[in-house]
Length: 355
Ligand code: ADP
Image 1 (tube, rainbow, N blue to C red):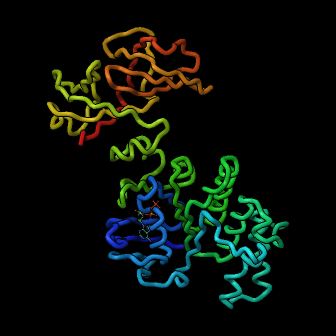
Image 2 (image 1 turned 180 degrees about the vertical axis):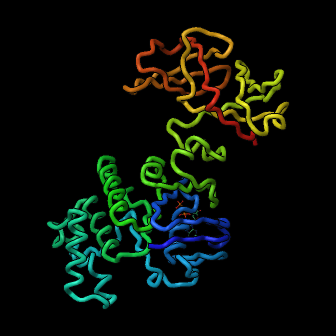
Image 3 (image 1 turned 45 degrees about the vertical axis):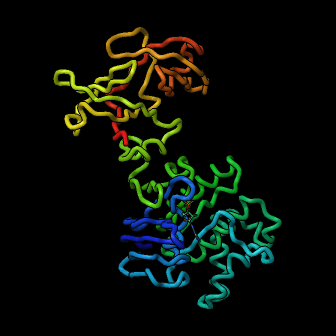
């Protein structure tokens, strides 16, 4: 096991800057997920760590060793890919042992012992003599994991390893990956475009956009305290409502003023400077609720869509030309076209620059 440090890492491909000056520290034994939209530089970052790409600038360190120019085979990392990358003409057993045999450092007994151990952990004992074509997607991915496990690397690098599996299997494999990590404690970096996967698996989550790191935090802190508008909109489903507002001073209070509402803001840094200007008010769907009756702290909106989800009722509403979503109590008696009074949990508001 080891920790990993990226310092000022940049990668350019013929004019396309895929990774822009990344600084990142991954502690020993952590399970770090890297999430962001397609093309934001996640895979390139992982490939740079693996040594499959060379950084244009910057340094990558594993433990105390500078590995920036080191060949992939000398980095002591094992990578698991979305497409499994198994040799089709070899059995599962050969696929798993191939690397160990090629290295020539292990006795046959040692190889056999390692395979048996990995097969038991991954529950693939019965599949070892089959070729990839005779295995399901989930089984193939287990074999690919087995191949990574027997190498006993310092770091696991996983690039969307579950993307080719159906939803049910993905959830099952997710739980198994979490279990494997708690058993072995190997430092793991896991790239995904799926925020649920990123939040459920990672003890730290790196959110990337456009080649840059937006925020590195625990899943809950990312959700509760997004540092940028991008993170606020990317993390959470349905997404955070984003309402353009004016910031106005009212006595000692500050208010977010929209076309049809005035919401008193909790005290916060920067409000004095923001007063008189425009901002984006971020409200999570669960921070809005339908009020019994209108009062000073509520505003009126028209319900446009109702979606019963069982444990809540998702409402889409409109006030003026602004639309937003909220989770109401499951049996709230409202239908499209109704006017409802809404209150906001003022302690859970977010404010972003309007640019
Ligand atoms: P992600 O994994 O987040 O989808 P990638 O790291 O694969 O993003 O890609 C980031 C950007 O770098 C994209 O614009 C992509 O087209 C570009 N890119 C990635 N690999 C190469 C390459 N080998 N040659 C040229 N451009 C590349």
